Image (tube, rainbow over all chains, first blue to last red):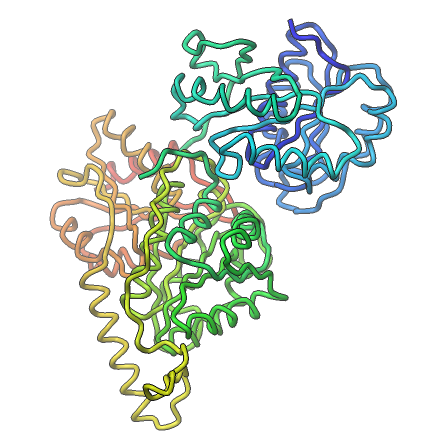
Length: 219
Length: 352
């Protein structure tokens, strides 16, 4: 199994799939027998939140820390104080869902010194090469550098989350492997995982595949 | 068509607008349409376009008015409270016979309301909104692909008929992500001899104005404008018809409500209920004739809306109340579930 770090940070371009990956990663931690909590500190987009998965996560024994006004229609970017406890107490695994782009990563600033001091963290750069502003490794690198400029922490690895939503075919994922490798060369960061929707299990050929489930839409 | 990408509805509008030749965007941030402005702020500087975050929605729409007078493709976007602020400017643009695109990614109201999806700006979009006699061409996308496709169409129709067009979306279609094949960049070919582009001392100067102090002159402008509107009503009605040919119960729904309704229609058919769906793609002009024709065979209609019932008035007018019309609605940012719509279909099946 993957060598889980005490703190896992999910950053990337907005719409790259950070929230869904963070939810699935927290579930994987729990499935591996770790005490885990998921903190949503996405101050950029108030629309899709890890809080949407709160009931499911809690039923699995995963604690969920959300913004005080999440899912209330109040668009107020304040951070929950419990995140300090999660970062500082070091008594359980922490998964942090960070907002998109450099603006989202700004929210990490106040917690960054504690995370850096403990130095037991993964900071994942989540990339979907089917997103229009990160179609290439070079374009993704621009976003990655912008995010790093907004936080004192450095990325530790890449998660290739390339997909076309419900229409994703196995070949769509496999086609992005060369781009992910280019990004690896450009950054010197390893590709930790390629995410694959559970419904495509066994149909994608590649290394370090991480199977994820998606929330179902009623339309 | 190019290879598919995964986009938010808001982004798809922005990219499609750029590919339709729009190089001027003026806006002001508001959830749930902010990604549109954010996308423009990243893309426009790279392609020699203008992105400007104005000091207010009112300023933004008047900047649109200015650029529209030069004949350049121009747009603004906002969400419900912000679109209310733009109404005066929209009336001036309509009164000056200028093409422009206004995007409304609707949220719940009235007042500040909420940030969740809604369709309660239907009256504002289709019946005026601002002062005076005028119309907008109002297009209602129901998918991210349509967000892109209808954006290009809106620019084309606005140019063709010299009138503002509106994309009437909602928080869900704006925020959700779906694969989309973006249109190729196409040159804008339409001639705009009325535009204010400098005379070069070779012609009389053009004037962009909505002020006519002589009432007979103003009346003439209004009549001429409405002759153009009649052409739009004749030529530009668009709708999708789903399983309506033998339908006893016809659902009328647009945008996200139509997607939910389609699932309900499929479920009703499995139960042996002959349900169908008319999805207006243009809500002005409204598909009056299609509904009127269906009123000859259908037993009843259900208007499914994310509002307290606004489009239902157009449904009733279209069929001249020849058949019962019921409302199935949620409001305030709530979306009806397919089961709720199915329940409304079952109820009407018992009644008619």
